[in-house]
Image 1 (cartoon, rainbow, N blue to C red):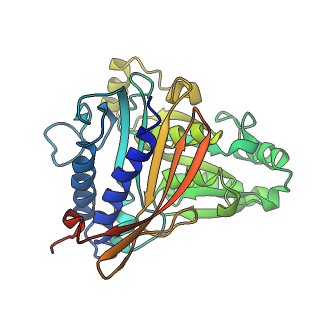
Image 2 (cartoon, rainbow, N blue to C red; image 1 turned 135 degrees about the vertical axis):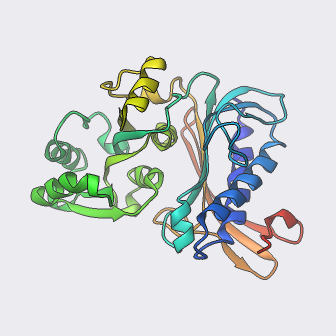
Length: 321
């Protein structure tokens, strides 16, 4: 992939974040998602690449979503797989909560797992604990392994988990082991990425969330030198049959090379609302400010980017309501 795509992708997530942030706290998650999607698609049309959406929000007849199979870019440049979530945390934005992001990941064509839209059991850690986790092991054993790798006591380890009834057993075991817990209402992409940065205070992610989000998070962690393991959790016969048609073994543990093949991937995210890692969009007068991160696996580069955007010169960033 061309290095120039790294900065191009930030333009995409910035646009989506600026547009959707106007809906923060207004209780209208669909409107926020639509705003992010339309802004993202507009900027994608200017990027010199031949992109195909392999992780998206819907099917072709579900416009305005960025649908699986949609072609993105100018039609010139490298052929890439695109995993996209214009607004990761629609409910977060609607309620004015924490850690809503606009996110994109790309890799060379054929290198991203075409994950079906169903649940995935996940475990994720940052670079210090790579090679120590095992999705088939107990919560307690994984805590011990991560604590040892990071030179911590279990009581000092912080695990992040989506606050869902399906995670009651995980939460109970975490508490029994003595670990600290950060429960999140939504946004497990941010939860996984946070494991790679000391300043977030998060050491490990446990739990079941969306499989598409698992691939996006894996792309980010590949760039960061972290690790994510996942296993699909079909919830009905239809989803089991879909896995069979895709030749996916529902018992398989997907590891990093299964989720994101090759030696290169690019990930970009812009904060929509404030989080542990990224600030959310701020507006003042005719300007909007953004805080983004962009990562590339091949070079190992991590960039934090603060942007100041003239809304008068970007009229499509203004939301009419």
